[in-house]
Image 1: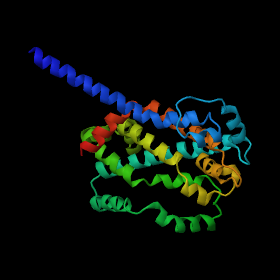
Image 2 (image 1 turned 120 degrees about the horizontal axis):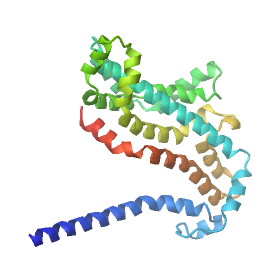
Image 3 (image 1 turned 90 degrees about the vertical axis):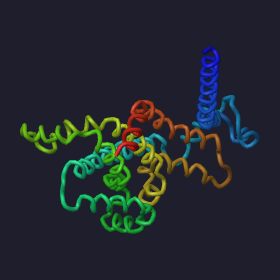
Image 4 (image 1 turned 90 degrees about the horizontal axis):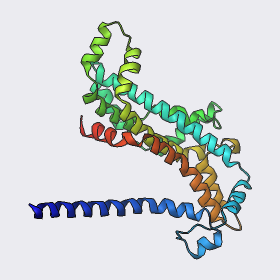
Amino acid sequence: MHTKKRTSVGYLIVVYILCVILALLSIFPFWVMIVNATRSTTQIQQHAVSLIPSSYLMKNLKILLGKSFNPAVGFMNSMIISICATACSVYFSTLTAYGIVVYNWKFRKAFFAFIMAIMMIPGQVTMIGFYQMVYKVHLTNNLLMLILPAIQAPAMVFFMRQYMIPALSLEIVQSARIDGAREFYIFNRIALPIMKPAIATQAIFSFVTNWNRLFEPMVLLTDKKNYTMPIMVSLLKGDIYKTEFGSIYLGLTLTVLPLFVVYFLLSKYIIAGVALGSVKG
């Protein structure tokens, strides 16, 4: 009996040690990035990795603010695009999944197969045609062109459908219809609250994806007042005479901070959302 207890205690100690090591390995790159934001370019070139902060934070901030663009404007543009695109993709993907699960119509399986087929087409392939269309309607410097396409999110539709099948009872929908509730009322008041864990999970992934987007904004946005944070950080590497690595790391740190905030606000839903949405179906 005592041998079994010792074995279980030893097993737990090993598990905790492994968890601590994995946590430290996960935190390490972010800590190095934050520390490098406080170091000079010379220090970074001499020793790329350091765990001790330096005293060049304000100088790096001055260099960052001294560029030809305004990081505050880029931060605001990125927030607008990420929040609006996330809201559109989450809501309309859930609505599409609701239509596939709740309604029994003739081409339901074919429609879902078509959505899955779209997942195999990379966005870069369609970018030329999309740019030509945007150019013809004179919306190349409009943030809406980075928000509206988020309505179509095949991977999110698949995730929402897999989550909704076991989570949403069709009897509840039928009862609401008998009571006289309309379809959008049922969706907004019954389906959406049930889908909250899946919505929170996908909101995190969608926000991170839209915040880190670089290719599409660089193609569609040419006016500096519409630049996003990833564009501005990428332009920091374009100095002719000298690259200020400290300011680059500071720009990366400012870019990552909103992702931490969103993650910590919604992280409690991740495990439940991923487990129920991907395993059940």
